[in-house]
Image (cartoon, rainbow, N blue to C red; front, side):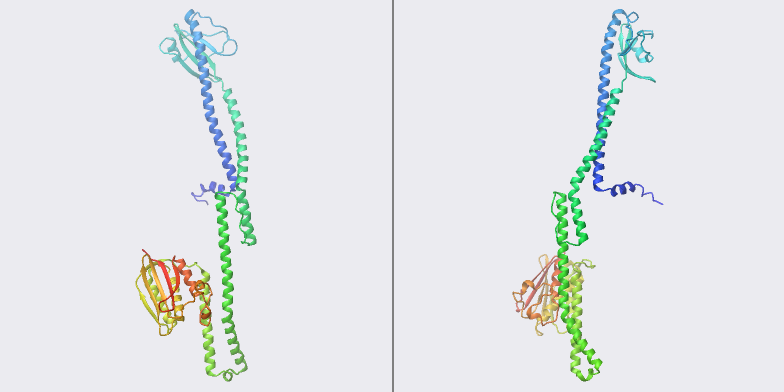
Length: 465
């Protein structure tokens, strides 16, 4: 059962199901049909008015000739020529209301009260339109002597009918021509879109996004093609980034997985032989188990960072106004719990920003973890937060050896690790995640040398108003 509000939508749904080419054809044909109809109405009205004015002028001229004769001889004695069988009709109206008509003339409509008043001299001349069952007449009454004369012509609609028939034929031809022209224009105008559609279908079918769609046309079509090419370029970049991420992840996972597999296979082999207790001393077993635990932890960290990095900017966490000082303190607390030996010196002031709390805390935690790897045990990692103008500035300062100038351009690349850092734990993803989070918040991150000789990582984020 259809609701009351669904019925008006059916024409709209029918219209939307039509192709764009058919819509343009219908619109063109409809526009021409409406134009022809309006032109016919205007032309018919002008032609009818012109014919009526011409007929009335002829009646006035004929009545003046007959009135002059009636005034000379008198209405009762004026000679009326026999009716020739066609043309105008005439009669004389006497003061008593009686009439005289030419011999053989068809009967005219009865004399109207207004015409009798003209015959009695009570009114001026009169133009009337009389309609009978068979014909209609234009009748002009003019005072003549002590009576009046009337001249009439039968209304002739044949010129208008012929004109209307001609306009109908012209209108049909124009509508058909307009539909043909609209179809041709639509086909020509939509040809670039057809080629664009074919190219898009080809890309969807072959999954080949390396070839751009040829740029053709102008205006909206060119902008559409450029937008699709930009989309294809973005897809290519995304596919390239995914492929690079997969290759780098496979490379980084290979080493810890190989080491973990070898250690586990060694334990399994010794256990099957029953020589686990005799082949490995308690100290060796403890060291092997610690090594396994470290490798599992490294794999867990790497997988977590890969997952976070692969998600990109897709995040369900909502943006909110927050105090960045709270985020920094929470990140420092997590860093101390993960690495109890790390010493962190905080110097933070409240600065409000608009951002995602968990993402920002992850970025700060990565900065502190990176600094903690390099800073000596007796030299704390210094974390400073302050407001500078319209920005919140976070600085993480370590007292390590610093970053070589050759490594600075690549320090935020995925999986990049300097030669001096390859022996240290880590995946090479921490600073890459930092840059992604900072970029997503409209900020900047930079590397410099600190006053203590180590690395200084400086993050600037827009402060909230």
